[in-house]
Image 1 (cartoon, rainbow, N blue to C red):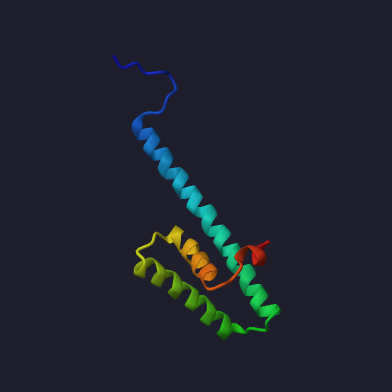
Image 2: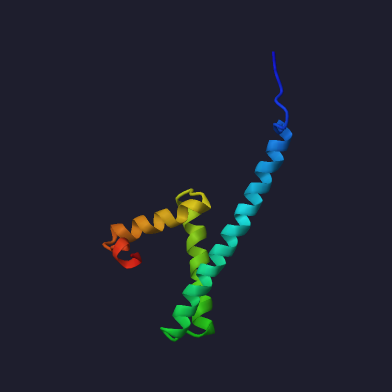
Length: 100
């Protein structure tokens, strides 16, 4: 016997809610990524003197690298930072020392 508790969302309502949560999460993630990218570009511009052309080449290379990593290693977009960190560590870079 199936008993329905009042105020419990239906399967369709849960599906719609999940889609909305994912949509909002992606908006927040995009805003966070934009904020981080702008901060990196700011440092490259004002601490290292990079101009428009060099910043554009950096941004293009970053995009190209992300696509390459995802295609070559068959990664989900969220796995790209993990792979980059692993490759940096494997090459002898102490990520913890740099970021902490």
